[in-house]
Image (cartoon, rainbow, N blue to C red; front, side, top):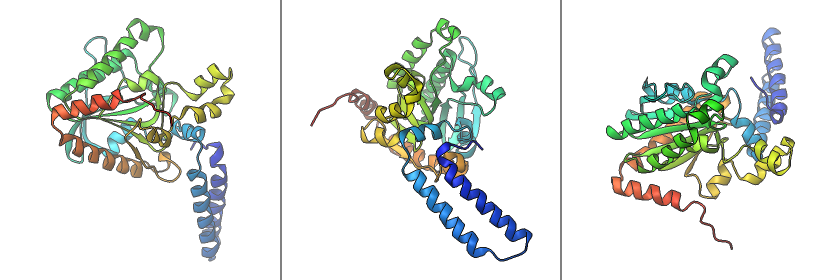
Length: 317
């Protein structure tokens, strides 16, 4: 598993614990006291590390290759997933899968960015950076959800929309802008969850929702910390400072009123326990679906409009 720099003290203790357990088993000797002491020390070290994470450290966790991706949540938190393909203009986009599913017995349409864990899958998924046809497919599925009165769940996990020449030729800016307008008008509940990276317009293209929720160690920003550092400090090495200044992680965005809820992750991050993370995801999403589904359509639309209209309104002390 990928080991982050700040996780090394816990990893060292974990190796020592494994040695003790191996020694106890191989030599058939009672080392329960030593093992218990080491387990307590490991738990304490992990708790200390993860309760004091800096924004840059959270960004690193958000990018962890073992973190659950969109289709992991689909398999662990949803049932009866039936994927739909194609935007009916150009083709399909494997970086933006979506389709019908059930969550907690409720029928929904689920859409999201999908990354890959190895080179082959990353090439297929385009590293989670969707093309214009991905956003057009997403909107097509949202319109189907609206037609059948189904809640929409989008899962955001992208460094940004694909910036290649082909994407520009097929008008990716228009595809995203069109989604922003049309999502504001959807007559069914929309819930967006930032799973890991929430980068720029690529994230916002499926992020206009009644409830915007973030995983505890995700980030959501107009630009990456490295991009910001390259502009303001003229060097990517200042990314940790940029992450601190940008207020891009869940606790900061919750305090600023830009997101509606935060889903707690297991100690150490979602990559340590996919099932526990998916269970927490399901519980929070279902609670919001229940509340939103009880609202009359006109109230749902008015509250969605007011939510985004209030962004950027600031009054100094």
